[in-house]
Amino acid sequence: MTNVRIIPCLDVTDGRVVKGTNFVDLKDAGDPVELASKYDQEGADEIVFLDITASSDRRETVFELVRRCAEEIFIPFTIGGGIRSVDDARKILREGAEKISVNTAAVQRAELISEIAAEFGTQCVVLAIDAKQSANPQCTSGYEVYVHGGRTPTGLDVVEWAQRGEEYGAGEILLTSMGRDGTKDGFDCLLTSKVSQSTNVPTIASGGVGTLDHFSQGVLEGKADALLAASVFHYGELTIRDVKNYLIECGIPVRPA
Image 1 (cartoon, rainbow, N blue to C red):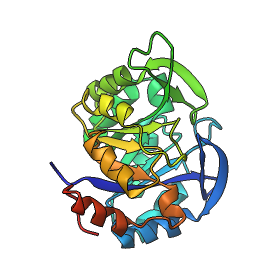
Image 2: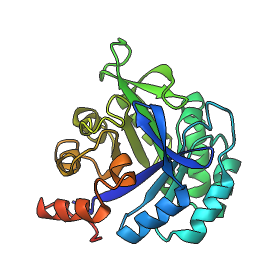
Image 3: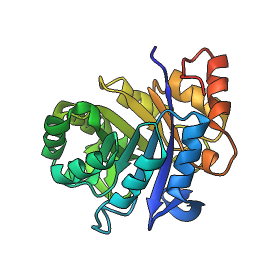
Image 4: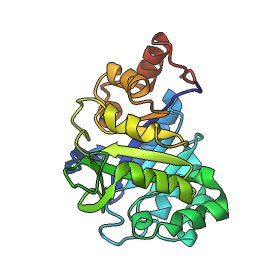
């Protein structure tokens, strides 16, 4: 097993980090660059920034945020939200991001994944999937893909879309359980394992982590390659070091904090 990555996620809107529950009831959690710098110093492996209203509000990603982060942090970071073209991706990567994440625009036109991968390599393309349990008969896995920050159902089956995304050139899947988001009830390991075992690219588990046990469950039960968390880090309930030391005790390989 390769090292499991621990990734703080910063949901950004109007230049501030916010966190809610089930994608609503958002509360301010701080300045994105200050938080990212703190997590860098604590031993995070990567940082993910998601401009959570960029697609729904039809705004461009905040390129200024990318520039500021590139000056302050020294670990890889991913930017997502409102990326609709190769030109958008090019500007973000040139400003200093390591990877870009696509979600809504990729569902609307899957060729975007291939175009970005052809230009910059599959390692730069993260396919973000917001998933919710669904009785839709088209969603045979029991989970449906949502877009526009979790506002709009698509009728797409999550596992089938993850597989298609890989075929188009996504180098990684960022999988968020909408039903677990912000609840601290633990990762949806059934969802995560369905995607991780149906694809050949790394899966990042996201949504619901609240305790140290949840991190190990994400790897051992969910078969995740990386673990993403937000509020437990933002509000000081756990530190990166806490998580990594615990995983080492569980026999799960990580890069030491």
